[in-house]
Image (cartoon, rainbow, N blue to C red):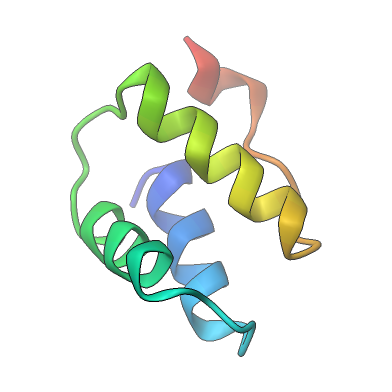
Length: 62
């Protein structure tokens, strides 16, 4: 499991109030080990910060 998958699963299971589109996005990337696009990565970073979860590891930015 890669970092973005762990982060997405953490958000999905944290009991945070998610909007339907946020949940759909997180569910999609939680089960996809392919690298994120820059736009996907940015949205994940925003969601993690919004819900008080730790940021992605710097290696994920490469």
